[in-house]
Length: 298
Image (tube, rainbow, N blue to C red; front, side):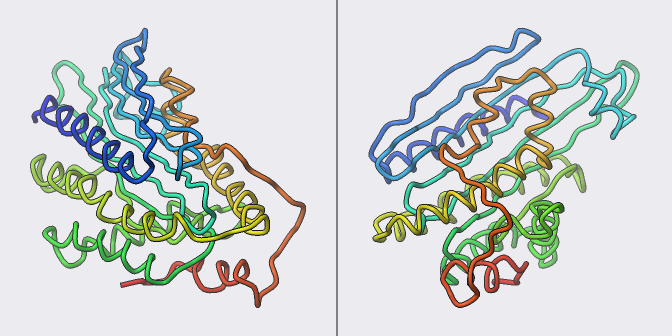
């Protein structure tokens, strides 16, 4: 295994994505380096009140320590008593324009070691799109880019990781998808390190190809208070998922990661309403009937 090579890739990926999004937004990201007293640290790159993004963060972290929290070892008892190392790039972009979708991407590597035992390691990651107003051409483009990135790893890879994404980014308490999905994978350690690393690289390196054209296409669409109000309402679902179900958020907080960097994924303006449902014949209603349905887009 070559963990320095993984770290080098992740730092380079963060830099390239930040530069690509800065070209669209026009406002530079604030780069904020931080240290973790227990071991490690990272670099947060965040923009707020940009020209296009209301909030966006592209974060790199590399943390390590002598042991994992009990919540992690309860799910994976083979990790008890092992030192660990975790690194990754995680991003969430919240455009101001309601017609431009929110997007999430994450690629990560984990390794746990114990003297006299083989290391336990895996890769994880993926990307998913959360529109407020649905466009079929955007969904098709996003999923086709994901499929193209995974094609070198077999015809069954994209369908499997697409279903995994649909299942993972599902609000069980609402019984609805968070968005129109993408791809997701975790615990990837077969068939070998090099193949797993290459697949993870392909996902990360295709993020800008998947999202930037959509952002550029929608960022200047005229909108009004109605659209902003619905965007704020649907952002509430994003908050609920990240705080209730997202394993990465929980892992980061429980391992002493930087709270400001972890919670930058939350949108800046959010609303909740009691038992509200949009009318079926409205653009808001069509998001539910035509897009939040786990559809095969390609």
